[in-house]
Image 1 (tube, rainbow, N blue to C red):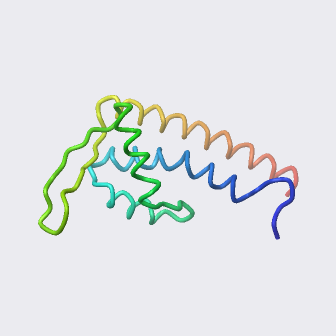
Image 2: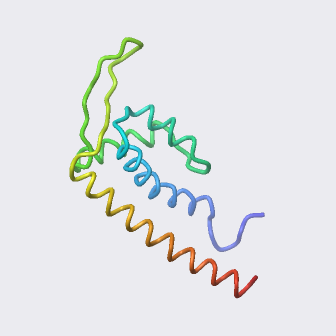
Length: 120
């Protein structure tokens, strides 16, 4: 049954877009990764629909804004791979993003709980 008054597919798409950047920043905060490896790791997150066509433009934008650095490494099993890592600025931004996400999830959790208590 499709809810009236909201396009739930569009809503979830918008939600995923914002979370995708946060997830990328956190994965790269642990180690440098190449693009396809990011696609595979992000694809394991239930509900987070990820394709190469989504990831690579986002990685390019993050690199151009100075949040990521890249290096190219030759591969014996195919074309050279571009590895991504957080820059110093990217590390600072990641910390801020995680703080904001923590505050948001805590606040939204409280609101959800209040709604469930009221209507539960």
